[in-house]
Structure formats: C-alpha cells, structure tokens
Length: 337
Image (tube, rainbow, N blue to C red; front, side, top):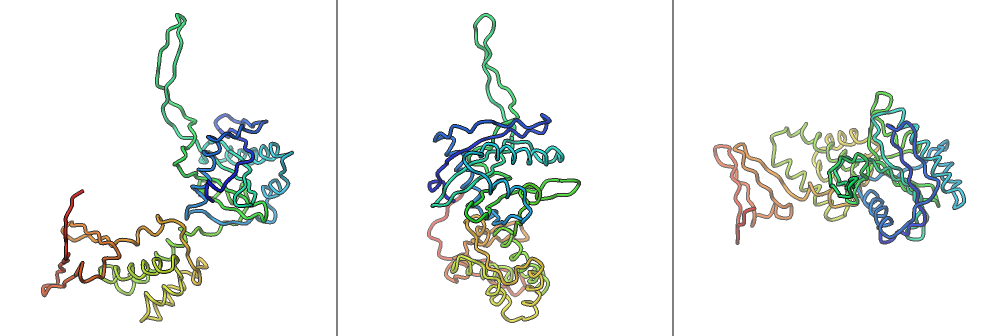
C-alpha cells in the first residue's frame, strides 16, 4: 500500500500504558490534518510494503473480526474503544508487552476501504522544557521523556490493516513473552487470526534448507560449491523476480535425486516444498547480490554477482600446493573508502 494512494477518513488514538493500571480511552476522533495523515500513512506504507508482512485471515470465532464487521461511522469511536480495551487487558496481564498508544484509522486505498490498527510503542528520548520563575524569568532544561511515539522512519512492531471487502489482513508483529512462553500475541490472542509465514521468512527457510543439504553432501569447506549455489539462487531471482522451490531444487541439485528429495523433506515441514517465494523489497534479496569471501589470512573480498563467473574480471586459480589465488583483471581505476 503506497501512501500516495491512501485517503485517511477517520482516526482515533487511545493510551495503553499498563504502568498506569488502566487505559486512557478517547471519546473523540482526531483532527485528521495533513501532517497527522502523512505520519499515519507513512507507518502503514512501511509495514505493508515490507517482506515481513503477513497475509492473514480471521478465525471464525474471532471477537476482533465481529467488532470490525459491525464498525460504521456511527459506532467507530465505540468500536475502537472496545478494541483498545481488549488489547490493554492482554498487555496488562503480560508485562513483557511494551506500553504504547493504539491508533485506529479508517482509510481507502485504490478503491477499497480498510481499517488500520497501529500499536505505537513508546520509546525513551530527551526533550527540552522551559520553566517560568516567580520573577518572570525563563529557564530552559533537558528532561527525559518516556512516551515518545515512533518516528515516521521506524517500522512498527505490531500493526495491521483489514480489508473491509473480504476481511483479509496485512499484519506485522513481534513475539513477546505471554504466560511464560514467546508468542505472537497480536495475531494469536488479540486479533485471533491465522498468520502464515511472511515472504522474508519463506525466503530464509528455503535458502537455509538449501545450505544445510549442500553442507551435508559437500562439507563446510567447499567454498566454490557454496558460491555456485548462491549464484544459481541469485540468477533465479534476477530472471524471474521470485524463487520457485521446484526450479531451485532441480538447478542446484541437478545431478543428485537424493539431495533433491532431502530438500523437499525439509521444506515439507513448513509446507514450502512446492511454493514460490515472491519478495517485495530489494532488502530481502540483497544478500544474494554479492559474493563475500574471507581468506585464512583475514583478507575480505566482495564480488558483485554479475561479475562473478566472468573470466575477464575475476579468476580463481588452484595452485599446485593446494592454495588458491584470486586474480582480479582489467582494472581501470582503484578507489579506497
């Protein structure tokens, strides 16, 4: 969801600071000026356009779903208060969940209507304060402020937008300790929705499984093989913009049905053996764009993937004594950072 496509229609904010013992719920909507609108749009764009975002569906028994389904302009404030009260009761019982404000917004984007729930966790920072003395003079001081909202450049830890046409959810979240175990409380307890793996998690699982199978059969010291595997994954991402597990399996382990089968077994545990991973952002695939090498003498070499394998640029030479030389060719200019 791009912020330029969003139109903010309504918004309200509630204070959920469990150290206060009770929430401070607003009775009125916020004045949705351009600055506030840009602030909220920026946060929504940042998490919805990230590969960590999850595409979820409500459980049939979800109380949050029932509240949102019944939301209208006439009861928007009351619906938001009930959602905030529900979230606060979870926070109040689990001290590991951080305090914050909860913004509930109604927006449209590309012809669809959404409700967004943004948990704005507090951060600690310093600000100035001016005091006026009894004699009318001013004194400036620096004070610690413990309830600073996240800046527009920060990604929220917990937030969602709900498509009101079909009830689908775009969600980002983080695990906190709940009743003694780490849980995704925002989806599992508050929203009661099914949260499948994000694109980033799928990418990590697939590439990690490929590395594990490769290490088992080729060992941990076969640097050339590791680089070749990385090159094949990069090429697939570069050519198709996605990572088809079936294609990767056949290309990376083309000469070993046993390795293909073992990879499929590993990915079956996550229901990913026939999936196509489609990353949204450059950040997710960035690690495949360069080969990073470190010698036993501590020298670090970084090779852009488009140059790796080009014999006119880089050559790896195995010497008679078993050592390896890296020859970098046709350099027109050297610079130092």
